[in-house]
Length: 369
Image (cartoon, rainbow, N blue to C red):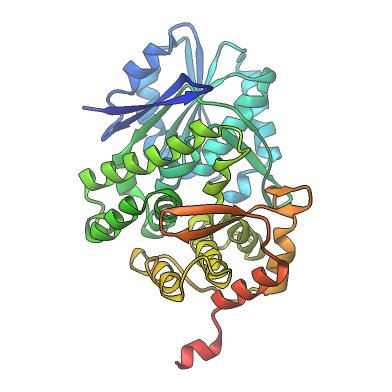
């Protein structure tokens, strides 16, 4: 039996998140959205298309006016305006109008790009999210942020556009390759760090079951993580205040992603960014040294990196200045006062960032120790 959670926008119900172990309830959920006379386009990538696109297509094809599939090559390199243009062209050729609907089937790249296409095609059409990765289930499918990268800069072009539904088939996490799975876990850990120390401790207590992807534990983990994001985005849907806390680890993490030419997964860079942010928090006397090292080391059992090779600290610091979270020339940096308590700080200096990045750079000396 699927479970559900309602996300409110401006204090009114906006869309539901459905948590299930299959796609069985998807057809009924879509019928409730009134799809009988609407065209539906499943937007997915080449990896997810092979796994789930046909299954979803079979569920929806007889419930709507027309169903089609648009697929693009998987990977961050496809999250561009050029791919969005190809989506627009496909929709035009298929006769899609403002009454029709897009279905984002895949991970964060698919969800962000499909949402952006929905927000901008004919000045806005409906879309739903069917996230199939832990990264997208834990984070990017919730809250209405959409966007594409621009010349390698993360999410520099985008819009807020709320989905009509988020349908999470938690069993899809079983098909993720290990590195991608644990990359998504970085966002789960981040939610505990910024807002809920009890959830953070639960993650550590259930470490074995999480690593083994035990279904009931995964569903509880995703639901509890989603409830944290729900609480934050409902309070601040347009990121004018508390929603910025969700960016813990992202300022330095995005810079590392770009500097490494996207060789590292997003969640891996977020983990590195969280370690750097915890280091700065210690140096700003918000955390004790012991708290910093404990936070750092807790990423290791979940196969997430706490150090990185071949990056230049000054280059990373320079890249953070292009971050979209700059406000009136000041960088809104997220620091930790303790596990479960994050704050927005505008006093972090370039030297702070350089020192923090140097802390996470793996050198030949480390190998000798």
